[in-house]
Image 1 (cartoon, rainbow, N blue to C red):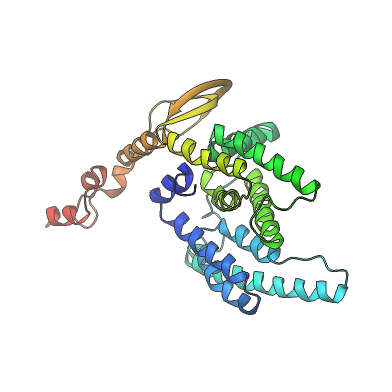
Image 2 (cartoon, rainbow, N blue to C red):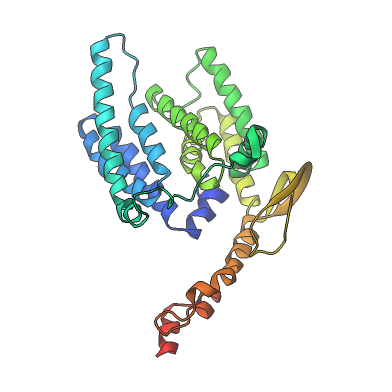
Amino acid sequence: MALTSTVLAFDNIISIDYPWATFFWVIGCATLKNSKARSNSIIPMALAIGSRPIFALFAISSIYLIDHKFSREPANWIVRFKERLSTIITTTFAGGLFYLPAWFWHNFGLSWISAEPPDNQGLIGLAGRFILKLIQAFGLVQTLIIIVIVVLLVMAKRNRNHTLLIMSKHDANFLGAIVISNLLIFARMPVQLSYLQPLLLCCFYILSRLRNSKLLIAALMIIGFNLINWTWQPRIVKIDYESDDICSKTVATGAKIQLWVDDGRILEFEKGSRKAKCYRGWFGQIKQADYSPVIINGQPLRLAIDNGK
C-alpha cells in the first residue's frame, strides 16, 4: 500500500528532504520501542528534524506517546514525564543545530521559515481545506473504504473483540496516537500532502495487520485503487484558479462540489517538471556557465560546465 500510494510514491521523488525525514523518523520510532536504548533515538529524530523542520512536531509527539501509560502512582508518572521531557529537549536542540546557519543569516529571526497556515481563508475554509487534502492523500474511494474499516474496528473494540488486528495493544495504541497527533498538526497547517506521511505509513501498517479476511480484502482493494490514481483521480470538488499559467502563483477564485475525474499523478508529475522553465533565470550565467538549458531538459549539470569551458 505504501509503495502504491500517490503521496508516498511521487512526493518523495520530487524532493529529497521528505524521504530522508520520514526514514530517520521511522528509525527513531523503532529505537524508542527498546526501553533500554531510548537515548539512541535522539540521533535519528534529530536527523529527521534536520531534514525537514515540520518533523520536530512528529518527533515530539512520538517521544511523548511511546509506551505512555497513565499510572495511578504519581511517582511513576513524574519519572516517565521527566524522562520524556529530557529526551524531547535534547532531540529538538540537536535537530535545531542544523538550522543555526540560516537562523544566524537572518539575524536570529524566524523569517526563513516559509511555511505558514492559510489563516486568511477563515475557519470554514481551513476545515474544508483540511478535509479535501485528507481525501486527496488517500484517494476518494480509498477514504470511503478506510472509514468503513475504522467503524468496524471501533465497534469490535466496544464489543471487546480484539481479534481483528494482529498486533499488541501497545502498538495499536501508539500507532493510533500518532495518527491522531498527525491529524491535529495537519488540521492547523493543511498545506502540503507530505505532512501526512507519518499518518499514511501508520494507517497502511494497521491495515496490513487486519486478521479478518473480509477486511483484509477491503485493504487489498486500496492497493488497486491506488494504482488507478496513478492515471485517473476522481474528485468531488472543482476548484477554479485565477490563472492557468504554470508559472503564475496558484490562487483559487472559487470552488463547487462536483464529481469529476482529474489527471493521474503521473501526468501531474510530468506537468510539475515543466515548471523548471519558470526558474531558468536563477541558473543563468553562474561562474561563466549557463545551467538553465540543461535544467529545463533534465540533463546532467556537467554539460553546462563543459559548454562554459
